[in-house]
Amino acid sequence: MNFLEERIVKDGVVKEGNVLKVDSFLNHQMDIKLLDQMGAEFKRRFADKPINKILTIEASGIGIACIAAQHFNVPVVFAKKSQSINLDGDMYVAEVESFTHKCINHVIVAQKFLSPEDHVLIIDDFLANGCALQGLIQIVQSSGATVEGIGIAIEKGFQSGGRIIRNLGFQLESLAIVDGMNAETGEIQFRDQSRPETENAGEEKEEICRSATLD
Image (cartoon, rainbow, N blue to C red; front, top):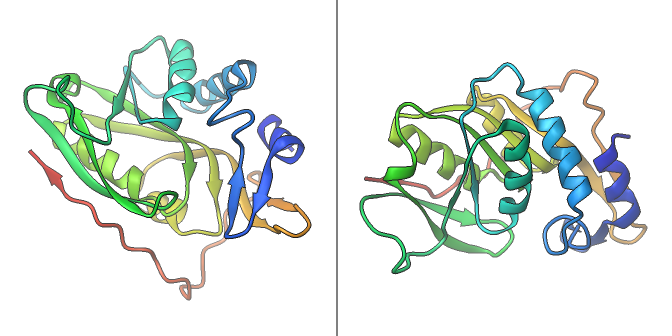
């Protein structure tokens, strides 16, 4: 097990409905030393990429992205989920469906913070069906910037998001991939990432994300 998998086993809580609660150390209360380890690992995995900006989405991704940004020595841009009076000028907007909250969010980034010269690393805490990531990817591509890679803390490997994103050709690095959970026993099964990923036989139904990028 790697350091994040060990922490998930120690302090993570499995709930009914394939819910993994890591709010004691990752996305409510945050263990900064752990986040620093994660940032260092993202830097190692994307060391050959000319990254000059990190993009995430509010709110849970911000802490991870900010600590990771210290290792890359780059700024962080976080996409907002609602329009506010503090947002002005032209915007990139993507409509994405939230797996966690079962709702549609309008994800917004001011155009002045992304340009064709940017080489972007997208970072988030969880990956389930991949809709939020697809929205962020569309925003980056609409700006003319380049998605150099995607870093995820915890991927739910039993859902289709990771496979969809990888099939789009992006370098997706998840620090922990959960392939199964049992709410009754609390058991968590992790994917051995040292072995090649086996292709799905095609029987799994891909989840369709509602997303559209607007200028």
